[in-house]
Image 1 (spheres, rainbow, N blue to C red):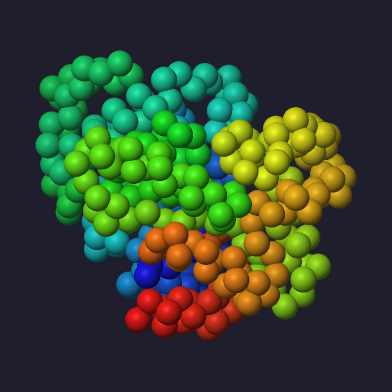
Image 2 (cartoon, helix red, strand yellow):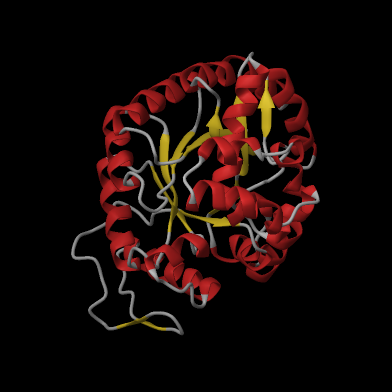
Length: 334
């Protein structure tokens, strides 16, 4: 089993250094940081984390080829991979269309753009010429890195829609499908399998992370309140494929979205999060987490990725996961 942690990028950089060291000590295999717009820079955070750790792999979840050019993504990936001794994993996808609209940007040809970006970045970090004449990327013969990369950096695709999920199986080294709720794992697998069939690969050929949200604490109310904040902030941007698993729609989040993103009333937004919306993730004690994750293992999950908010006290949550949850699943697969 592989275990990873995922963080949003809203915290001070020094906090990620503390959390990464704790994660490494607790036995986690990977440490991922997102790069959401107008928050702190994931490339800077991950560089600090790389300098402060020795074993744990580090990854971006996710960069997108709209706000950051694919050539610059390749430069960053190869440079950080060199710095951290081959521990970097590149998380890539199209990004959230709602957030791109803040910049007046249209998410044109999202699947094509991401697939072509994967091909170009793979060539660049492999030390090859990345001349492209695609629908989204048209690059000349001058498209190559002027230094020798340590290796071709593995690319993980973030995905929620059926077509992007399929591309995890078709073109990526790994996948970061968001499972809202965790039981959505059964819904994403058929799409990924179609991509694997296209590429002539098996599921064991890729690192497929079962990406969940969790808030872990012995204080149930505090755990639920912490998860409610994340649901309130991101719920409106989730795909219909995910929301239908919970009997919800984007319309259910419209008042919440307006309260948080337009009116800036965080308390009002939080108060409108319902128990059904909280089922997007898992909030509670380690035993509650284990109970719902057992189903993922039965479905074949071999990588469980624990995502934000993690808990009202993050270091406590990391240590609780390391002491109780990771050993449970490692022993069950022994």
